[in-house]
Amino acid sequence: MSHSPNDAHDHGHHHGHAHSHSHAGHSHAGHSHTSGVTDQKRIGIAFVIIAIFMVVEVVGGLLSGSLALLADAGHMVSDAAALAFSWIAIHYGKRPATLQLTYGYKRLEVLAAFVNGCALFVIAAWIVIEAIRRFAAPVPVVGMTMLIVAFAGLLANIAAFMVLHGGNRENLNMRGAWLHVMGDMLGSAAAIVAAGVILLTGWTPIDPLLSIFVAVIILKSAWGIVKSSAHILLEGTPDSLNPTEIKADLETTVVEVQGVHHIHAWSITGERHMITLHAVPAPGVSARDAMTAVQQRLAARFNVEHATIQIEDAECADGHSGADCDGASASSSPSPARSSHEDHGHSH
Image (cartoon, rainbow, N blue to C red; front, side):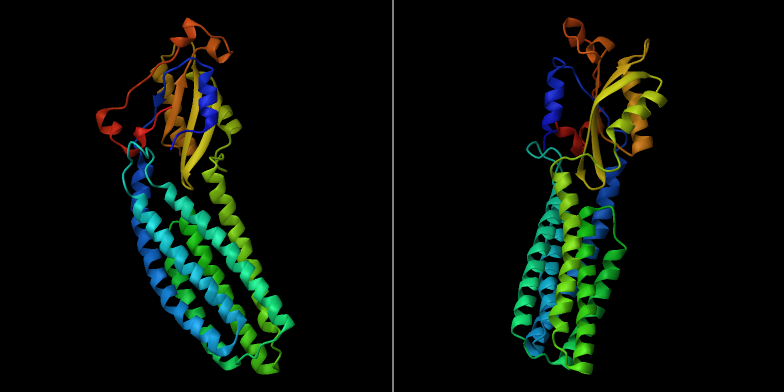
């Protein structure tokens, strides 16, 4: 993946200034891979639980005639597919970067979250349409069968929920899987309530009514996942990184620079952020010292372990051009050990 078009546009105004790369330990990579293994195992266990009970609930919904059960079963089908997609995304996301995919495969997790969110919209729409049909043409519901299957479904969903609950909540893909299962829990709870009402009163409209309630909850979860994942795929600025705040902080606390500008921030995944910026060293400070100071501050204050910093002098920052600006930047090359890291393959 290349940097955003804005970066290319901004850099074009500075006549080929060289760049400096931060590789401050890359502790995030190790954390990502470690949590990825744990999360992958959790998702795998949850998938087995959901997939087994999905079949039970489909059969129970057909036998009882309950839309609430079928709605929950439909959601579980979506859950099983979502969990499988999430597992595959984490598995392939651990592959190293290549010359063609210089940031590796980590974005597969974000793509999985986006697709899962879109799938939830489809499931919710189907539930609402089917509920409207049930209001127009009521279908007999076997309350006891519905109650037994719904209660068993709730237990299965609680088990899957507890497995996923201990995972990395900062990971958008993991959060998407967690929300899928939480929606299933609510669906099973709604089916239990509907079954109880039908057994006590015989009032069957409660079945499609509570199904619509579940659909609304599903839509709310889906919107949050789609919005967050689309923001990352569009290389939007992470919520935790405000360019105005970054500029003020660096210019106030980093004495080695007198100004920073052209700040761009985006995410590879929900918890892995990147920054590019231009920095003007303070008088008498070398380009390398200014670059190092900015890198260290970004890592310490904003938890950004990978930054691309372009060093330039004050005249270039004011928009002047010429030979002086062409030679104003300093570039440092990472050590051989660091250059082998998966992040280093990208270029500007």
